[in-house]
Amino acid sequence: MIQKHVSNLLEYAKLHLGLSEVDTVYEANRLAEKLELTSYDAISPDTEWVKTLDCPDAMLAPILAYALEKGIVEEGEEEFFTSEILDMVSPLPSKTISDFNEKYAVSPDDAFNMLYDLGVKNDYVKLSAIRKNIEWIAETTKNKLEITINLSKPEKSNKMVAKMRNVSAGYPKCMLCRENVGYVGQGRTRRNMRTVPLKLAGEDWFWQFSPYAYFHQHGIAINFEHIPMALTAKTFTKLLDFVDYAPQYFIGSNACLPIVGGSILAHEHFQGGKATFPMFLAPEMEELKTPIQGVSACVLDWYNNVILLKGKDKESVAKMGERILDEWVKYDDESVGVFSATYAQHNALAPIVQKTEDGYKLYMQLRNNRCDDTHPDGIFHAHKQYHNIKSEAIGLIEAMGRFILPGRLDYQLKEVEKFLTGENTEIAENMAIHTDMIEELLEKHGNKLSADEAHTVVFERVEWVCERILENTAVFKNDEQGKKAFDRFLAVCEIKK
Image 1 (cartoon, one colour):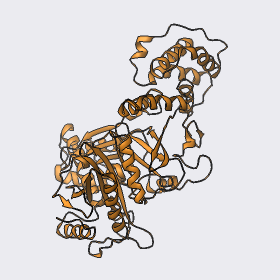
Image 2 (cartoon, helix red, strand yellow; image 1 turned 90 degrees about the vertical axis):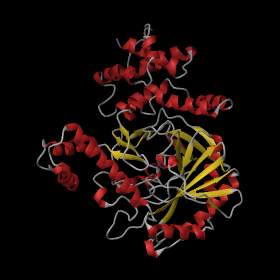
Image 3 (cartoon, one colour; image 1 turned 135 degrees about the horizontal axis):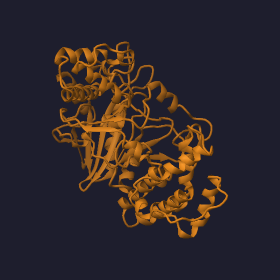
């Protein structure tokens, strides 16, 4: 029977991964060796079934089961085995780049679509895991936030993220380095990863898709060199160069400080892809003038503080971005608790770029990572009363309105609902984190709700919390004092009516 499954795998590779008929016998013998078969007899594959597969899980399952049964692979090493199998029948990195460039010459969008499809079909992009995520649009929120309960990746604390971001030794130096292509070790496998090169501001970069995507075609642009994240004037040029190269995508840089940059900061990289985040749809306030000719500005009607720059000339847009950056990194306003630096730098920016028919859009999110005794995890971070829903850093994606909530909530929110129906009466130890929320909901709604009513109440509470967290991240609050403070900063940047 294993012979049949191998035939299906080879057919899958020919249909979906570009395996040449000429190379089929060669790959069959490699697979036979891996599966410890003494011979391989070609059996007619289930071609029509294989054609329908949009990812390899169903086709790989019996091969993996065979390998586990025969002791070829041990439990816990399944991903290492399947990535090796799929790498065998995937195009080499050089062939991937060649095919990408050939298609890019005709259509950039088609080229990136091809690369993404390859990542899904060879299981580097974990489509089956991503499909497990729970997603919905928050209809109760002002800006229709997007909320995901992430069941494909474990929750990481800020301390764990800090440990990961500081990895800068060994081989590869970090999880983003280009040496990861084909790498196996340190508890991960990148055998089946494929990348394409980029030129940003004259520097060598490359693009890869994220295996656990947070949105459609979620990818990462990564510097060839292992250098730390930094926000400089050149950053704006790099981002603008990228949307010239891939105009169908947005691209953005996390703020380059802990807490406000929920990402690996040891290696310069950007995140982008095909997504229209809620922030992109936020109403634009009054159009403002800037000191740079041809560049206009406005403030978004958004939860945190975003200055949107628009212009047809990318050098001019970059120059205005640099002007705002230079002012913000040293800007203090004691009246609203904004201090650019104390023992360390606190003010930071998260720039995001889009290209449209009218020119370039540069969104400048103002961020600050200062902590104090009242808010030891961050004054402009999710406050402690909301940590039962979200405690991790609020980075680029969530600051734009797409929340990635921890997988534990799938179980915990269902348990909260049972309190509102009367099924649960005592708060178990593993639910203690939600004690305050449960008590508040019971006081307001009682414990006689139907299952559907309880579900609606709990999910609307999550939506409400996500809005409050975004408000927490605003350095200038949406009140009279905050608006006046924001106006003072705009004046410093010579942005005015």
